[in-house]
Length: 451
Figure (cartoon, rainbow, N blue to C red):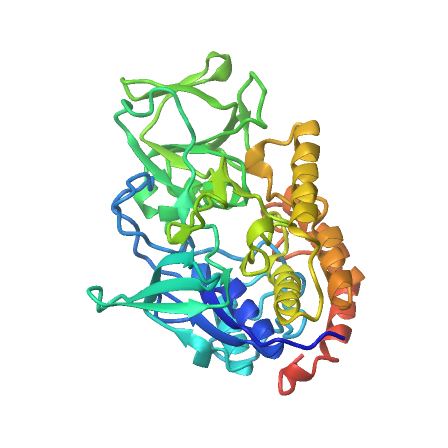
């Protein structure tokens, strides 16, 4: 075994990814400072009823609200499948906790707070501290400039051996490019700024997108709106198609043009008069603080070049990212990535050479292109997240993903597709739940929990 090296590491963000990274880095023996712009841990899981003054989020100078949660949001994965491997997400039988298998967002935040408390991560976090610049100095160290949010005239410059970026990707909205939208007289909003359905009462709403948020929000809005029209590329029927079980939700093909008279024209010639366009169209990766002299870029939502979605080859292992992939069970993947990063920084395991990593990245990009996968889907791990996680586990010499977790993820995905109204409260995988809790009872860190 090579000697274990202890590094000074900056972690940017104290959401789930940052907390997990801090935990694994410190456990490996590194000295860790976590920078967090908010006053508590939790990242995107901190709900606020505040929204941005620019409802579609295109003004670069707007005051940014970090969270994209809406008030009624429940997880679309069961707590067992999204649970961290070393700290099971079990229901606590206390008055203010949410015991449901698919809990609301407040329960997830409480879980992350519990995790931070269990492993004393809070003592590593500098709250209300925003990172304004990260760059590599001439001596190879990484310079981190931070600003206390209440003392913006004073900044602090510090040097670290390594930086781990854990800032999430649910803050900077992606907007659908709709011809005529700039002259359309109605209101436009991105789901980032959606909180409750009340502002949509008696309105005719066009929702762009068919993602999980579009599915949930469309049904919630329909309880108060006059009409809801869901436009997506996946709907190609020329005939009117109402959503089963609803009298005021219609599935439409994609919008063709927004007209100056307030109407919306869909493909195949259908037209309606609408009041609001709600963009449920996802988010852009954004790292405004990061200066790599052009080495790491965001091109059509591809953050690259990155070896295995984590390391820029020419800057590895001193710069890394946790939590970029999507269409995954995020929390356990954060653990795999964080353990890998921590072990590489300590010298316990090693990376390929920069040239070899770059060849791997180029081969991955070529495979996406050959499969006609758009560049913006580079970090979409549909179909291979567990293969990816298990590859990292092999590098680290750690246990691979539990079989029950893989099956449970698939069962939840199928339930979401087949029973979108009820899958959170009715399921058929109790055998997998039993297997999960048999594993959970083995976790030393959960002493005192109620199963």
